[in-house]
Length: 216
Image (cartoon, rainbow, N blue to C red):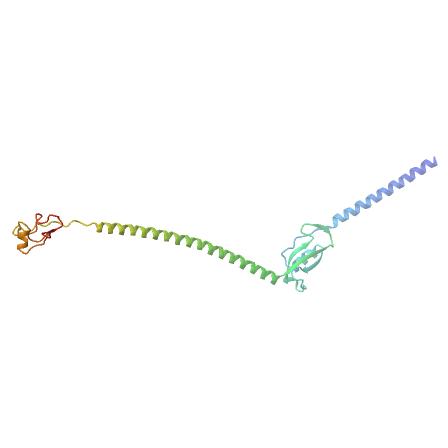
């Protein structure tokens, strides 16, 4: 009977010890979860504002110049470019957030250079587009001038051809008052040779019909 009671008491003590351990572990886990803080995003903020925001949440802040390795003196002259842990991470309160920063003057110079490069590129593209348009307009104008010149040349050639057509000289009969029966009479009168259109000319005196009578 005494042995049975002893076993019951020992079992109870063991169970009580196990329950206490589990309760302690659970309490620790709950405390850790309750102590976790969400890391805010501070990229692009100036270092002074980023530091203030992180420290208000219980974080420690370490910043370093990731571009040139310069010493950080005036925090407002620096801009956050990277952070670790990143935005949204759940970490314990009091953890250290590492920030990479860049001097605002350097950032402004880089932005100005990037803006200038973009403007130069846009200007070059606009100039190239304008050149394409101008070249096409010049080509169209040259083609139109060539067509006009060709038409003008064809018109001039046609006009020259028309002017080159030789019209036969009209046969003018000699006045009836002057008449030579034959070339002998014409020669006797000193009229040979007799050209078409002159007094005394007649086709009976111009056998070869070349417009000149009594020429042979």
